[in-house]
Every structure is written in structure tokens, then in C-alpha cells.
Image (cartoon, rainbow, N blue to C red):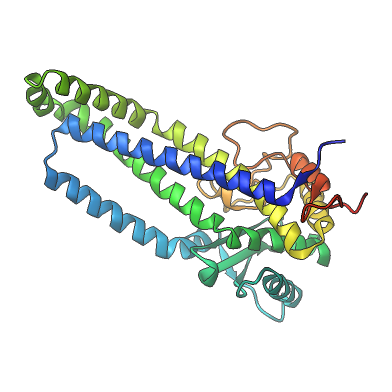
Amino acid sequence: MAERENLYKLISRNKWGTGLFVLLFTLILAVIGMGLGLWFGWDWWVYALFGIGIVLYNLVLYFNSSRIALAVNGARPAGTEEFKQLHNVVEEVAIAAGLPKPGVYVIETEAPNAFATGRDPEHASIAVTRGLVEMMSRDELQGVVAHELAHIRNYDILMMTVVAIIGGIIILFRDVFLRWGLFFGGGRRRRSSAGRGGGGQVQLILMIVGLVLAILAPLLVALIRSAISRQREYLADASGAYIVRNPNGLASALSKLAGTRQKLRSASNATAHMFITNPFAKDRDISSSWFSSHPPLADRIDRLRVLTMEGRDEAVDGRR
């Protein structure tokens, strides 16, 4: 039998891992920016303009990420009469989690799935597909909703928005270099560093490292984003089970989802990490690649079954 894990140790480990990934993202972005600046020979005011542009870009995405996510996935507000049980479940789980009730949306598709979005608990929403509502029992639906509310409570959605923002900026810098830098950049940099001796060599090294990272940006963004997403799914599973004190519901829901192969047409690679399961059914296999947005469903179910809470020996599946 697999070794049981304590919930709080799992949460702590995942948070530390996420912090390290975000730090790595920041360092990559800083080196790329410095390298491009040296290549083009930017003056201070050019750096200032880029800084202002990045801040504006961040603000637009920060305040509109929820609406964008709901719109691109075709989500509409769930009627309180038609989806009465869904609203009841969301409200009771929100109370258990100590959160305000999020907006409740539905996606008209038979492919079972769900996601949460929002910059903070006060501006959060969850969206579920009609197929998921029709497939799940009340306990299973409760488990799914608890998983999504755990994402909200853990600020996972904000974290993934930050990662997407930084990743987008890295790719933007890469495109600037590839389209214009190779042909129009470098002259001023070479002239300015020619007479600087050791200082010029350091700048040259930083420039080369920055440009290499810029070229490899898409690979790095996909790898780091996927790694963060997989760890956050494990954390949301554990936190959701803790919220409702009934991990059997989530484990049963994941088992049902593991038996489906329906793909969510409204999803894309940019939004795949948001859903409770991979919308292209790529997490149904036993193993996953480094670029997978979700860990294998079988692994998530196994972790739930050996998880313990509050440091006790009681397993989440009720066994002693």
C-alpha cells in the first residue's frame, strides 16, 4: 500500500514548489529583457516605456481574466431554477470553505468538465458543463465543486494568471528579437561594448544568455506552466477533500471522468490547465509527459485514497 501523506505537508510542499517556479519565471524574464536591451542598445527611456507597457498589460489581464475565460469557453449564467441543485451545492460548499458564493456558470456541452476563474474569492466564478451536472450524483458534484473552490481559496487561478502574463511577455520579447533584432539590432551594442574590456564581455554574455532564453521561450513557458498546473491539481484535490470532509465524492467523480473520452471543443491549449480534467482527455493514460497540463487521473485518485487529514491515521477512503 502506498505511504499515506498528511494534507498539510502536501499543501506546504506544493506551495514551495510553485514559489520556486514563479521565481524562475521572473529570473528568465529579467535576463531576456537585459539581453534584448543590450542587443538593441536601449537607453533608459526605452526601458521605462517597456516597463509601463508591461504594467498596463498586467492590469488589463488581471481585471479581465475572469470574463475572458468565461467568454472563450462559451459559459453562460446558470439559471437558479434549472440548475437548483448546482446552486445549492455551490452555496453549501462555499460556506464550508469560508468563501463568498462565486458566480455559477454552465457550458452547454455533453463533455463533463469544470473550471474556476477569478482574481480573488470576492471576484470568482465556477463553470461546469451540462454533461458533468447530468453525470454526477450530489456527493460527486459536491466533490467537484469543492475542488474548484479550493482553487479559488488557494489563489491558484491568480497564480496561473501571473504565470500566463509572464509567459506572454517572454514570448513577446522572443518575437521582437526574431523579427527585428537579427536584422536591425546589435550595431550600437557592439560599438558601445568594444572599448569596455571586462565589462563589455559581461554584457555580451548576458546578451547571449538572454537571446538564447528568448528563442527557447515557448518550450520553457509550456514546461513550467504545465508543472505548476499539475501540482496545483494535486493541492486542490487534497484541499477540496478537506473542505467537505467527504473525499469519496471527489474520488468517485474522478473515476467517472476517467472513463470518458469526450473532448471539450471550446477549450484550447491556453486554457486547458484551468479545467478539473484535461479537456482533450490526455490525462486518462497511466503516465503523462512533462508538458501535460494535468497529472494522470489514476494517480490523483490513488493519492486521494491514501491521504490523511489533521495528522490522524484515518485514510480518506474510510479505511483504518
